[in-house]
Length: 424
Image 1 (tube, rainbow, N blue to C red):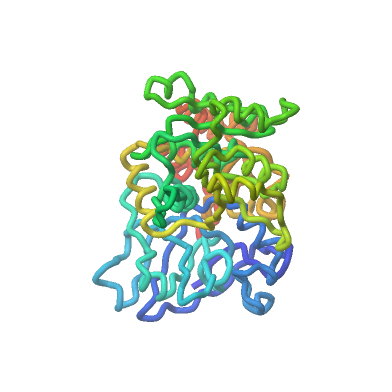
Image 2 (cartoon, helix red, strand yellow):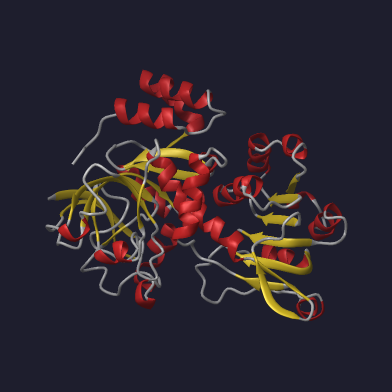
Protein backbone atom coordinates (compact mmCIF):
# COMPACT_ATOMS: atom_id res chain seq x y z
CA UNK A 1 0.00 0.00 0.00
CA UNK A 2 1.01 3.62 -0.46
CA UNK A 3 2.14 5.74 2.49
CA UNK A 4 3.50 9.23 2.89
CA UNK A 5 6.27 10.07 5.29
CA UNK A 6 9.34 12.11 6.06
CA UNK A 7 12.43 9.99 5.58
CA UNK A 8 16.14 10.43 6.29
CA UNK A 9 18.42 9.92 3.26
CA UNK A 10 21.59 11.31 4.86
CA UNK A 11 22.85 14.14 7.03
CA UNK A 12 20.55 17.19 6.69
CA UNK A 13 18.57 15.34 4.02
CA UNK A 14 14.94 14.87 5.01
CA UNK A 15 12.31 14.33 2.32
CA UNK A 16 8.53 14.19 2.42
CA UNK A 17 7.71 11.48 -0.09
CA UNK A 18 5.28 8.79 -1.04
CA UNK A 19 6.50 5.21 -0.93
CA UNK A 20 5.21 1.67 -1.06
CA UNK A 21 4.80 -0.33 2.12
CA UNK A 22 5.29 -4.08 1.65
CA UNK A 23 2.63 -6.55 2.71
CA UNK A 24 3.03 -7.40 6.38
CA UNK A 25 4.29 -10.82 7.45
CA UNK A 26 2.65 -13.05 10.04
CA UNK A 27 4.91 -11.45 12.65
CA UNK A 28 4.20 -7.79 11.84
CA UNK A 29 1.45 -5.23 12.42
CA UNK A 30 0.29 -2.43 10.11
CA UNK A 31 -0.70 0.80 11.86
CA UNK A 32 -2.17 4.17 10.96
CA UNK A 33 -0.20 6.92 12.68
CA UNK A 34 -2.25 9.86 13.98
CA UNK A 35 0.16 11.94 16.06
CA UNK A 36 3.89 12.28 16.57
CA UNK A 37 5.81 14.82 18.64
CA UNK A 38 9.17 16.00 17.37
CA UNK A 39 12.06 15.36 19.71
CA UNK A 40 15.41 17.14 19.90
CA UNK A 41 16.88 13.67 19.47
CA UNK A 42 15.28 13.57 16.02
CA UNK A 43 17.04 16.82 15.15
CA UNK A 44 20.36 15.29 16.23
CA UNK A 45 19.63 12.25 14.08
CA UNK A 46 18.73 14.42 11.09
CA UNK A 47 21.88 16.53 11.17
CA UNK A 48 24.22 13.60 11.80
CA UNK A 49 22.72 11.11 9.36
CA UNK A 50 24.66 7.85 9.21
CA UNK A 51 27.12 9.17 11.80
CA UNK A 52 24.37 8.82 14.41
CA UNK A 53 24.68 5.67 16.49
CA UNK A 54 21.11 4.59 15.72
CA UNK A 55 21.21 5.16 11.95
CA UNK A 56 22.23 2.35 9.59
CA UNK A 57 25.16 2.88 7.22
CA UNK A 58 23.12 2.35 4.05
CA UNK A 59 20.43 4.91 4.89
CA UNK A 60 20.95 6.54 1.47
CA UNK A 61 19.67 3.35 -0.19
CA UNK A 62 17.18 2.45 2.52
CA UNK A 63 15.91 5.74 3.97
CA UNK A 64 14.62 5.69 7.54
CA UNK A 65 11.23 7.09 8.53
CA UNK A 66 11.66 9.85 11.12
CA UNK A 67 9.74 10.18 14.41
CA UNK A 68 9.60 7.97 17.48
CA UNK A 69 7.01 9.62 19.77
CA UNK A 70 3.87 8.41 18.05
CA UNK A 71 0.41 6.95 18.49
CA UNK A 72 -2.43 5.86 16.27
CA UNK A 73 -4.69 2.96 15.29
CA UNK A 74 -3.94 -0.65 14.45
CA UNK A 75 -5.07 -1.48 10.91
CA UNK A 76 -3.97 -5.05 10.24
CA UNK A 77 -2.46 -7.73 12.47
CA UNK A 78 -0.25 -10.63 11.40
CA UNK A 79 -1.64 -13.98 12.51
CA UNK A 80 1.03 -14.53 15.17
CA UNK A 81 -0.28 -11.54 17.17
CA UNK A 82 -4.02 -11.79 16.65
CA UNK A 83 -4.60 -13.14 20.16
CA UNK A 84 -3.25 -9.90 21.65
CA UNK A 85 -3.96 -7.15 19.12
CA UNK A 86 -6.80 -6.44 16.73
CA UNK A 87 -7.71 -3.86 14.09
CA UNK A 88 -9.22 -0.71 15.54
CA UNK A 89 -7.17 -0.72 18.75
CA UNK A 90 -5.39 2.51 19.62
CA UNK A 91 -1.69 2.02 20.23
CA UNK A 92 1.44 3.66 21.48
CA UNK A 93 4.89 2.14 21.90
CA UNK A 94 8.18 2.30 23.72
CA UNK A 95 10.81 3.04 21.04
CA UNK A 96 13.87 2.28 23.21
CA UNK A 97 13.95 -1.35 22.13
CA UNK A 98 17.54 -2.25 23.07
CA UNK A 99 16.97 -5.39 21.03
CA UNK A 100 19.77 -7.94 21.32
CA UNK A 101 22.26 -5.26 22.25
CA UNK A 102 21.56 -3.00 19.26
CA UNK A 103 20.53 0.66 19.41
CA UNK A 104 18.00 0.31 16.60
CA UNK A 105 14.83 2.32 17.19
CA UNK A 106 11.86 3.54 15.19
CA UNK A 107 12.48 7.02 13.85
CA UNK A 108 16.16 6.31 13.33
CA UNK A 109 16.82 2.85 12.04
CA UNK A 110 13.93 1.38 10.08
CA UNK A 111 12.85 1.82 6.49
CA UNK A 112 9.17 1.17 7.20
CA UNK A 113 8.82 1.92 10.92
CA UNK A 114 8.58 5.48 12.25
CA UNK A 115 6.12 8.10 13.44
CA UNK A 116 6.37 10.81 10.78
CA UNK A 117 4.29 8.84 8.32
CA UNK A 118 0.66 8.18 7.51
CA UNK A 119 1.13 4.41 7.93
CA UNK A 120 3.99 2.20 9.03
CA UNK A 121 4.80 -1.43 9.83
CA UNK A 122 5.70 -2.53 13.35
CA UNK A 123 8.30 -5.31 13.22
CA UNK A 124 8.30 -8.53 15.23
CA UNK A 125 10.87 -7.44 17.83
CA UNK A 126 8.57 -4.72 19.15
CA UNK A 127 5.92 -7.25 20.13
CA UNK A 128 8.55 -9.73 21.31
CA UNK A 129 9.83 -7.14 23.78
CA UNK A 130 6.36 -6.09 24.93
CA UNK A 131 6.96 -2.56 23.62
CA UNK A 132 3.69 -2.24 21.65
CA UNK A 133 1.05 -0.99 24.08
CA UNK A 134 -2.69 -0.79 23.70
CA UNK A 135 -3.80 2.74 24.49
CA UNK A 136 -7.27 3.23 25.96
CA UNK A 137 -7.14 6.97 26.51
CA UNK A 138 -9.07 9.69 24.75
CA UNK A 139 -6.41 11.80 23.05
CA UNK A 140 -3.70 10.52 20.73
CA UNK A 141 -1.29 13.31 21.67
CA UNK A 142 -1.23 12.14 25.29
CA UNK A 143 -0.03 8.75 24.06
CA UNK A 144 2.61 10.40 21.85
CA UNK A 145 3.85 12.44 24.81
CA UNK A 146 4.02 9.36 27.03
CA UNK A 147 7.38 8.60 25.41
CA UNK A 148 9.14 11.88 26.26
CA UNK A 149 7.50 11.75 29.69
CA UNK A 150 8.88 8.24 30.15
CA UNK A 151 12.39 9.60 29.52
CA UNK A 152 12.10 11.94 32.50
CA UNK A 153 10.44 9.25 34.58
CA UNK A 154 13.39 6.99 33.80
CA UNK A 155 15.79 9.71 34.95
CA UNK A 156 14.00 9.94 38.31
CA UNK A 157 13.96 6.17 38.73
CA UNK A 158 17.63 5.77 37.74
CA UNK A 159 18.86 8.28 40.33
CA UNK A 160 20.47 6.69 43.36
CA UNK A 161 21.79 7.48 46.82
CA UNK A 162 24.04 5.74 49.31
CA UNK A 163 24.90 5.56 52.99
CA UNK A 164 28.44 5.76 54.32
CA UNK A 165 30.00 2.33 54.56
CA UNK A 166 27.06 0.61 52.88
CA UNK A 167 27.55 -0.71 49.35
CA UNK A 168 23.92 -0.59 48.35
CA UNK A 169 22.31 1.94 46.06
CA UNK A 170 18.95 3.30 47.16
CA UNK A 171 17.23 3.86 43.82
CA UNK A 172 15.23 6.94 42.91
CA UNK A 173 15.34 10.59 43.91
CA UNK A 174 15.48 11.32 47.62
CA UNK A 175 12.06 11.62 49.21
CA UNK A 176 11.54 15.06 50.78
CA UNK A 177 14.93 16.06 49.38
CA UNK A 178 15.97 19.02 47.29
CA UNK A 179 15.78 18.77 43.51
CA UNK A 180 17.24 21.14 40.89
CA UNK A 181 16.19 20.98 37.25
CA UNK A 182 18.92 22.89 35.41
CA UNK A 183 18.05 24.54 32.08
CA UNK A 184 14.64 23.16 32.86
CA UNK A 185 12.04 25.58 31.47
CA UNK A 186 11.97 23.87 28.08
CA UNK A 187 9.57 21.07 27.13
CA UNK A 188 11.46 18.19 28.71
CA UNK A 189 12.19 20.18 31.86
CA UNK A 190 8.50 21.01 32.25
CA UNK A 191 7.68 17.35 31.78
CA UNK A 192 10.10 16.55 34.59
CA UNK A 193 8.54 19.27 36.73
CA UNK A 194 4.97 18.06 36.36
CA UNK A 195 6.17 14.56 37.21
CA UNK A 196 8.21 15.69 40.22
CA UNK A 197 5.22 17.58 41.63
CA UNK A 198 2.70 14.78 41.21
CA UNK A 199 4.52 11.46 41.63
CA UNK A 200 4.28 9.39 44.82
CA UNK A 201 7.84 10.09 46.07
CA UNK A 202 8.25 13.86 45.96
CA UNK A 203 10.96 16.32 46.97
CA UNK A 204 10.33 19.10 49.48
CA UNK A 205 12.05 21.69 47.25
CA UNK A 206 12.26 22.05 43.47
CA UNK A 207 14.34 24.72 41.76
CA UNK A 208 14.00 25.21 38.00
CA UNK A 209 16.68 27.28 36.26
CA UNK A 210 16.86 28.76 32.78
CA UNK A 211 18.28 31.76 30.93
CA UNK A 212 14.99 32.55 29.17
CA UNK A 213 12.75 34.67 31.41
CA UNK A 214 9.75 34.21 29.12
CA UNK A 215 9.96 30.45 29.50
CA UNK A 216 10.41 30.79 33.26
CA UNK A 217 7.36 33.05 33.48
CA UNK A 218 5.27 30.55 31.55
CA UNK A 219 6.46 27.75 33.84
CA UNK A 220 5.53 29.79 36.92
CA UNK A 221 2.10 30.44 35.44
CA UNK A 222 1.53 26.74 34.81
CA UNK A 223 2.94 25.70 38.18
CA UNK A 224 2.21 28.52 40.67
CA UNK A 225 4.64 28.22 43.61
CA UNK A 226 2.00 29.38 46.07
CA UNK A 227 -0.24 26.45 45.15
CA UNK A 228 2.45 23.84 45.75
CA UNK A 229 3.53 25.53 48.97
CA UNK A 230 0.16 24.38 50.34
CA UNK A 231 1.30 20.80 49.62
CA UNK A 232 4.62 21.30 51.39
CA UNK A 233 6.73 21.71 48.25
CA UNK A 234 8.84 24.84 47.87
CA UNK A 235 9.10 25.76 44.17
CA UNK A 236 11.51 28.34 42.75
CA UNK A 237 12.09 29.56 39.19
CA UNK A 238 15.53 31.11 38.78
CA UNK A 239 17.04 32.98 35.86
CA UNK A 240 20.71 32.14 36.36
CA UNK A 241 21.67 34.85 33.88
CA UNK A 242 20.49 37.48 36.36
CA UNK A 243 23.24 36.66 38.88
CA UNK A 244 26.98 37.24 38.77
CA UNK A 245 27.38 34.04 40.80
CA UNK A 246 24.43 31.73 40.02
CA UNK A 247 25.94 28.87 42.03
CA UNK A 248 26.00 31.00 45.17
CA UNK A 249 22.37 31.97 44.61
CA UNK A 250 21.27 28.37 44.09
CA UNK A 251 23.14 27.22 47.18
CA UNK A 252 21.53 30.06 49.14
CA UNK A 253 18.06 28.88 48.08
CA UNK A 254 18.94 25.36 49.22
CA UNK A 255 19.81 26.67 52.69
CA UNK A 256 23.50 26.21 52.02
CA UNK A 257 23.39 22.41 51.96
CA UNK A 258 23.10 21.88 48.21
CA UNK A 259 20.78 19.56 46.32
CA UNK A 260 20.15 15.86 46.67
CA UNK A 261 19.25 15.44 43.01
CA UNK A 262 20.19 17.56 40.01
CA UNK A 263 18.89 17.00 36.49
CA UNK A 264 20.93 18.73 33.77
CA UNK A 265 18.79 19.42 30.70
CA UNK A 266 21.36 21.19 28.50
CA UNK A 267 24.57 19.83 26.96
CA UNK A 268 26.41 23.02 27.88
CA UNK A 269 29.70 22.82 29.78
CA UNK A 270 28.91 25.74 32.09
CA UNK A 271 25.54 24.21 33.04
CA UNK A 272 27.19 20.87 33.80
CA UNK A 273 29.77 22.61 35.98
CA UNK A 274 27.07 24.54 37.83
CA UNK A 275 25.16 21.29 38.31
CA UNK A 276 28.20 19.68 39.89
CA UNK A 277 28.84 22.69 42.10
CA UNK A 278 25.38 22.70 43.70
CA UNK A 279 25.34 19.03 44.71
CA UNK A 280 24.95 18.35 48.39
CA UNK A 281 26.42 15.38 50.20
CA UNK A 282 25.66 12.16 48.32
CA UNK A 283 24.08 14.31 45.60
CA UNK A 284 23.20 12.60 42.33
CA UNK A 285 23.68 14.45 39.04
CA UNK A 286 21.83 13.07 36.02
CA UNK A 287 23.27 14.41 32.77
CA UNK A 288 20.03 14.08 30.83
CA UNK A 289 20.74 16.11 27.68
CA UNK A 290 22.50 14.18 24.96
CA UNK A 291 25.23 16.15 23.12
CA UNK A 292 25.89 15.89 19.37
CA UNK A 293 29.62 16.34 19.98
CA UNK A 294 31.17 12.99 20.89
CA UNK A 295 34.07 14.86 22.53
CA UNK A 296 31.83 16.93 24.81
CA UNK A 297 33.28 17.34 28.31
CA UNK A 298 32.92 19.64 31.27
CA UNK A 299 34.63 20.43 34.55
CA UNK A 300 33.39 18.71 37.72
CA UNK A 301 34.41 18.92 41.35
CA UNK A 302 36.22 15.66 42.11
CA UNK A 303 37.04 16.73 45.65
CA UNK A 304 33.32 16.42 46.29
CA UNK A 305 33.21 13.10 44.46
CA UNK A 306 35.81 11.74 46.86
CA UNK A 307 34.85 13.36 50.15
CA UNK A 308 31.15 14.15 49.76
CA UNK A 309 30.12 11.08 47.76
CA UNK A 310 28.65 13.14 44.91
CA UNK A 311 28.15 11.16 41.73
CA UNK A 312 27.15 11.57 38.11
CA UNK A 313 25.20 9.32 35.78
CA UNK A 314 23.12 9.67 32.64
CA UNK A 315 20.01 8.20 31.09
CA UNK A 316 18.80 8.16 27.51
CA UNK A 317 15.15 7.23 27.14
CA UNK A 318 12.97 5.32 29.55
CA UNK A 319 11.79 1.73 29.59
CA UNK A 320 8.39 0.17 29.09
CA UNK A 321 7.55 0.37 32.80
CA UNK A 322 8.29 4.12 32.71
CA UNK A 323 6.01 4.44 29.69
CA UNK A 324 3.18 2.59 31.44
CA UNK A 325 3.61 4.80 34.51
CA UNK A 326 3.32 7.89 32.32
CA UNK A 327 0.12 6.63 30.71
CA UNK A 328 -1.39 5.74 34.09
CA UNK A 329 -0.56 9.10 35.67
CA UNK A 330 -1.94 10.91 32.63
CA UNK A 331 -5.14 8.87 32.68
CA UNK A 332 -5.54 9.64 36.38
CA UNK A 333 -5.01 13.36 35.56
CA UNK A 334 -2.12 13.54 38.00
CA UNK A 335 0.21 14.82 35.30
CA UNK A 336 -0.58 16.86 32.20
CA UNK A 337 1.99 16.25 29.43
CA UNK A 338 0.37 19.03 27.39
CA UNK A 339 2.53 21.50 29.34
CA UNK A 340 5.27 20.48 26.91
CA UNK A 341 3.37 21.43 23.73
CA UNK A 342 3.59 24.89 22.17
CA UNK A 343 3.12 24.20 18.44
CA UNK A 344 1.02 22.01 16.14
CA UNK A 345 1.46 21.17 12.48
CA UNK A 346 0.92 18.67 9.71
CA UNK A 347 3.14 16.17 7.95
CA UNK A 348 4.32 18.82 5.49
CA UNK A 349 5.85 20.79 8.39
CA UNK A 350 8.04 17.97 9.68
CA UNK A 351 11.21 18.29 7.61
CA UNK A 352 11.77 22.02 8.07
CA UNK A 353 10.71 21.90 11.71
CA UNK A 354 13.09 19.05 12.50
CA UNK A 355 16.09 20.58 10.76
CA UNK A 356 15.50 23.98 12.39
CA UNK A 357 14.29 22.77 15.78
CA UNK A 358 16.88 24.58 17.95
CA UNK A 359 15.99 27.88 16.24
CA UNK A 360 12.24 27.58 16.87
CA UNK A 361 11.26 28.96 20.28
CA UNK A 362 8.84 27.21 22.58
CA UNK A 363 8.34 23.62 23.57
CA UNK A 364 7.18 20.45 21.86
CA UNK A 365 6.10 20.54 18.23
CA UNK A 366 3.12 18.19 17.85
CA UNK A 367 2.47 16.73 14.40
CA UNK A 368 -0.74 15.25 13.04
CA UNK A 369 0.41 13.08 10.17
CA UNK A 370 -2.82 13.02 8.15
CA UNK A 371 -3.02 16.80 8.00
CA UNK A 372 -1.22 19.28 5.79
CA UNK A 373 -0.76 22.32 8.02
CA UNK A 374 2.13 24.75 8.59
CA UNK A 375 3.75 24.65 12.00
CA UNK A 376 1.71 27.03 14.16
CA UNK A 377 2.28 28.23 17.70
CA UNK A 378 -0.76 27.81 19.93
CA UNK A 379 -0.44 31.49 20.80
CA UNK A 380 -0.70 32.40 17.09
CA UNK A 381 -3.85 30.43 16.26
CA UNK A 382 -6.22 33.36 16.70
CA UNK A 383 -4.11 35.87 14.79
CA UNK A 384 -3.61 33.46 11.90
CA UNK A 385 -7.31 32.67 11.83
CA UNK A 386 -8.22 36.35 11.63
CA UNK A 387 -5.51 37.06 9.07
CA UNK A 388 -6.59 34.21 6.79
CA UNK A 389 -10.31 34.46 7.44
CA UNK A 390 -10.27 30.90 8.80
CA UNK A 391 -12.91 30.56 11.50
CA UNK A 392 -11.63 27.07 12.30
CA UNK A 393 -8.38 28.50 13.63
CA UNK A 394 -10.18 31.05 15.81
CA UNK A 395 -12.47 28.31 17.12
CA UNK A 396 -9.41 26.22 17.90
CA UNK A 397 -7.90 29.22 19.68
CA UNK A 398 -11.06 29.51 21.79
CA UNK A 399 -10.69 25.89 22.90
CA UNK A 400 -6.99 26.31 23.74
CA UNK A 401 -7.59 29.55 25.64
CA UNK A 402 -10.27 27.84 27.71
CA UNK A 403 -7.63 25.33 28.87
CA UNK A 404 -4.93 27.73 30.19
CA UNK A 405 -3.49 28.08 26.72
CA UNK A 406 -2.70 24.36 26.61
CA UNK A 407 -3.41 21.74 23.99
CA UNK A 408 -6.19 19.43 25.14
CA UNK A 409 -8.37 16.50 24.00
CA UNK A 410 -11.12 18.87 22.87
CA UNK A 411 -8.66 20.75 20.68
CA UNK A 412 -7.34 17.55 19.12
CA UNK A 413 -10.83 16.27 18.39
CA UNK A 414 -11.82 19.57 16.77
CA UNK A 415 -8.61 19.64 14.71
CA UNK A 416 -9.08 16.10 13.41
CA UNK A 417 -12.75 16.71 12.61
CA UNK A 418 -12.48 20.11 10.96
CA UNK A 419 -9.09 20.24 9.25
CA UNK A 420 -8.73 18.14 6.14
CA UNK A 421 -5.61 17.04 4.33
CA UNK A 422 -4.17 14.20 2.37
CA UNK A 423 -5.40 11.09 4.15
CA UNK A 424 -3.50 8.32 2.42
